[in-house]
Image 1 (cartoon, rainbow, N blue to C red):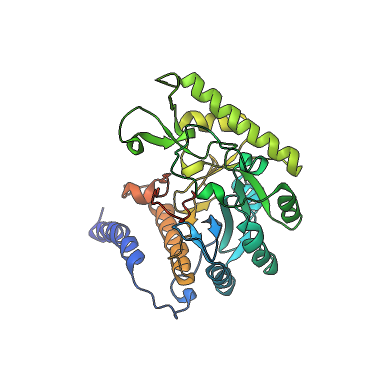
Image 2 (image 1 turned 45 degrees about the vertical axis):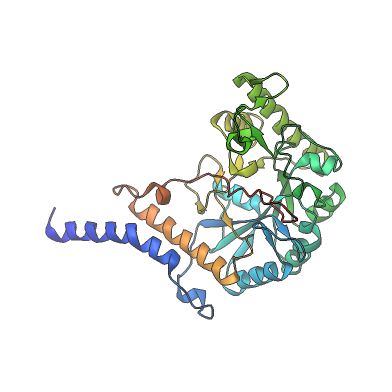
Length: 351
């Protein structure tokens, strides 16, 4: 290898290791047009994640209607194209194309604010979105739920949820709905240690502790529980909405090899996580990354910078994957839960 070639490789390595991190923290003036920051992306899809919209409730996963409107407006202003999650699925399966700067909008948990706040604004702008619902909360809003659930999380369960009638109305106008589990959106104890919070993890992520029997679930019992939950979620939604269900959003963004295998065996093909990034046609396992837009600190300008940052990192991965071992945080999909908040009071803490 000549000196010029070696110098080029060294320069590329330095850019890859340091520029993406600097780009994230670089202060971009709010008035500066996003088009001058980054030219955009093609054949890739950014998926945005939201939870709840409210003027009165507060929390790390709650934004105001005003902020949501401003985010939608800047997406339109900067030339982003909002597409459906179904079109994303067709794109990932090689059956469809996507426009430049494609964006999918998703909501988790199935709060009624999706109907009262998000839906009117989306419809007004001819935009589509997907909402992942906790199916049992739709069927029986007064249910106390699984006794293994963390007792100190009552606030989010008290927020009104969408109804089947509301979902059918929205579905007729381009919105879509898929499961966020049937009744497994909770943290469960996995061992009898103290304090309990250090021995908790998402219920679908592995065997849990059975208090009444003073033992941990066997692997077979765990897999049977996962299968029962995901199958019921799929069947109930298909009956009530009259359309196939092949997408799933994992509670807390966490699965396990066994849970993923079971979900695929039931007919789920596309899986939504909280791992951040842009999605392209190289995704063959249905694992979809998302960008958190539903935090109250994500201003419209910050949202655009976030999308551009991950599209830039994706370009780095595509161009240099064959020969440069980069930081795993950049190169490997990072499927982890969001920070989990247990603060008391009226704050909303849904994930």
